[in-house]
Length: 350
Image (cartoon, rainbow, N blue to C red; front, side):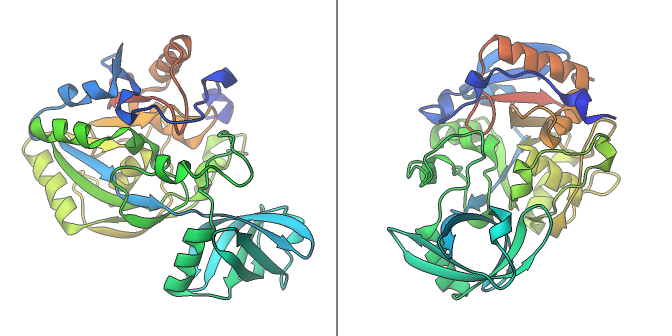
């Protein structure tokens, strides 16, 4: 398969720059059995049944973007993966400034200064930073100094927008570690959760700390040549038991977002049974993949040529997803992280 097979034209004006207000006023395109229906996320509960299990991601986004200086030059680093109590891997720009041994001083009006040394430099602007602080002291300092790491298609001042600390966090956020939000979860409100529970839907939480790799474009010509950046995830014993019991009873498993879908597949055996999981996953799902767990998927509208668009094409069928996206564009749905969503049935569009 060619990456170009997953391309489409999107008018820039449809890229959402802020979330819907209130959150549960977002639109939802329902794609099922080859048909499409325009709806609202508030209609989501009536598409589910008592006994269904809704699986959400409880990762919490950390303010991982840091502005600083090396000597007299302005620089920026986006933390991507913790390597130790005082050590982080980061995407740095301009990369030429981050030479091994260089000292970086990050500062903000709220936090004062945080200093780090460039320990190593990899490919693609990736560096390893050793901070002067470690552990909880470093966590607290980063919380004060950092800026929410919004994707590049959401335009903000260089110093960020304080509102994003609230807006770019899901209702379920509990475990810090992500540098990008699991955006399908951004649509949920307490009222929507209450409506789901009143419907008899069980809600189970897994954790996948979304990495900065989600922002990176696919640069290969052939899909098969792309390699995913590993991300850390966990499925607890109790969640595994809940999902397995639902499947045995003939109830459905509903994945809220691509992160949940990928983690469930990583934790499943060939028969679709979930076992407790804790570790990294680099699973790359493309058309032809045979899904083992989720029956339905709630997801936002994704970038052309992206691994996420490939995933939804695998779940719902490539041609039907292209038709669904064309419909969404014609109807002025809002795209990407702060945009609207779609509800897909597995194989409904194959």
